[in-house]
Amino acid sequence: MPSKKNSADVANDKTRPSGIAYLVGRLDHVLSKRLRDGLAPMGMTVPHYTALSVFRALGTLSNAQLAERTMVSPQSANEMVKAMEARGWIERQPDPSHGRIIQIGLTEAGLELLQRCDAVVLQVEQQMFPDMPEDERDWLHAQLRNAVRALSVHGI
Image (cartoon, rainbow, N blue to C red; front, side):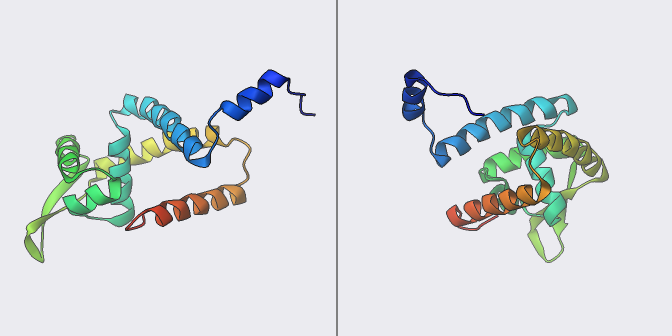
């Protein structure tokens, strides 16, 4: 049974930011911190995890495509690629159909690390919605993808 709120609680509820955009922003902040803390012991950052996940899903990409998919500038993507290549997580090869384009893809070591990191991310997601049934998770996932697509020029 819900507890009764006193007048101070009601006043706080009315003055506290509560819009969807605000809550999504707060969730992004808290989620990023949890992911950073969980991935750091494996030498992984959240942007690196995102990039490796994109490579797994889409295969090889150019630096420009990676930047677009990971929502960073081409310069930041280039720095990220250098760091991940130095760790042996990705490799670069010339595009066979266009000599000036370099294709970047996951290595076996990168895939193995990504799979270990997936367990951390899954644990954080389960902590976020511990009692949510799978069909509701699927619905939420679809709604979030739709929201991103609606606000993006290129979708995700």
